[in-house]
Image (tube, rainbow, N blue to C red; front, side, top):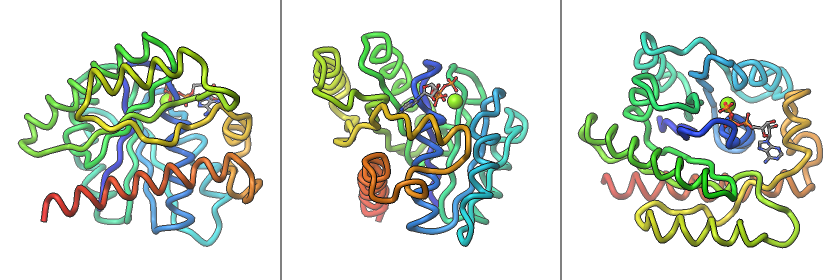
Length: 226
Ligand SMILES: Nc1ncnc2c1ncn2[C@@H]1O[C@H](COP(=O)(O)OP(=O)(O)OP(=O)(O)O)[C@@H](O)[C@H]1O
Ligand SMILES: [Mg+2]
């Protein structure tokens, strides 16, 4: 079952927020989800545990304490048990991140509208390529514009889109950014994804659009492999 990993060598870009939003939406629409948290800060597993309680009627588990020593076995076990496996990686470049990337089918790299984020997102792409070489397989990657301005797109935001496309033409930028919204912050307090809080709201629609894009990237990858 596909392993979707949120990665960036830069901290604080929105990896855990994007992971929790997307993983819960996939659990509500598509099938069972296992979240593996490989970041020692434990944000995804802590908030994921609250989320699991909110998501009644669906299979959603969250496990923390994923380390260099157990990441390969943990991913193998989660793949056998869940329809979708999500891995949250720490915002660094390490053996742990390399192992996590090597076991991924799709790596989502969040990027905020800033030159620093672009620089580190491109470094993350290099890490994905290295992991793909080590694992001797192709690993799909995409950029997710993160904490995006909800009002008019700033010059920095436009420049970020432009530079990512110019510098990494083989890595698609998801058309739908994850917008900067309080609903995503509120989710960290109560574990309730926007779709449960306000099903017709903007944040829920935002996550649903990203889910569609991610699912089509995954199915394109399956067709490629066939
Ligand atoms: N789309 C969003 N809308 C509003 N706030 C957001 C959004 N995405 C992230 N944030 C906020 O930005 C901060 C960093 O987000 P998050 O913890 O998800 O990033 P991260 O990449 O996982 O960080 P770390 O590298 O520390 O694990 C948090 O305070 C989070 O609430
Ligand atoms: Mg995080």
